Length: 130
Image 1 (cartoon, one colour):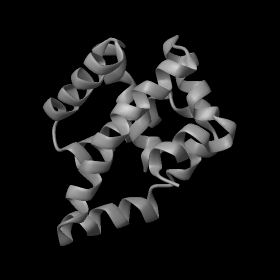
Image 2 (cartoon, helix red, strand yellow):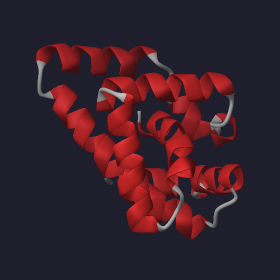
Image 3 (tube, one colour):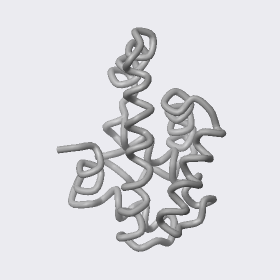
Image 4 (tube, one colour):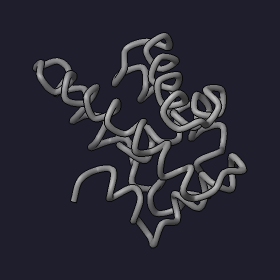
């Protein structure tokens, strides 16, 4: 199962439901957002994993970050600690806030969801992706 389908289906779609509730969106809108955000995160992960330093950092984050908790309990996605964790993940995966903004803008153009909403959603999606 690929990352996108895993996020869409985890726990019977609890993460999608939680994101929909957090942002006042329909589940179909969240699915569209994830369909546009997750590939960018996957590309960033692949880029990081292509170097020894990046791969070591990724493996360290995966083994010590306790990121599974976000999938197990999506209700914590909008907590300040979770968002800070997500922003840290984005920094490692995408490299800069400018790239994160570009990802959100491109997803906005494809989905019709506001870029500001997607910028706020992106750290939550990053925590789920980890």
